[in-house]
Amino acid sequence: MAEEYRIRLVTLGGGGVGKSSIVKRFLFNSFCDKHRPTVEDLYCREFDLETMTLKVDILDTAGDFQFPAMRRLSIATAHAFLLVYSVDSAESFRIIKDCFQARTI
Image 1 (cartoon, rainbow, N blue to C red):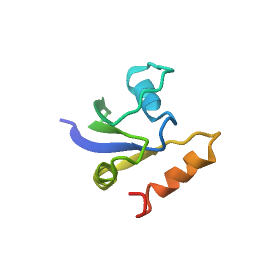
Image 2: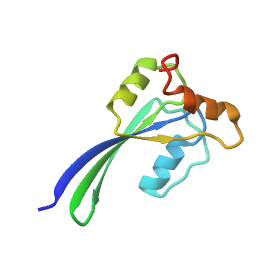
Image 3: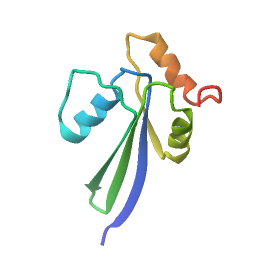
């Protein structure tokens, strides 16, 4: 019997940089070019590997800072992060760096 592991992957980044698009492309092989702001979405996927089953909870977070308590909890409960920024926006890269500093979270 294969062992089971569960991890939580949290997406972080500014609004409109493509966090939801990346997650949906990975999970569902789909893409929507219309931007709809996310509050928080949770997806669960199971991967059967040769010697284990990996259960991944993917938490797609909001890109704005309206919910700082939710962001703190997301960071505290994560095992891994997907950091997303726009290559044509220095501000979106700064937001990624600020996500782990006390003044933002």
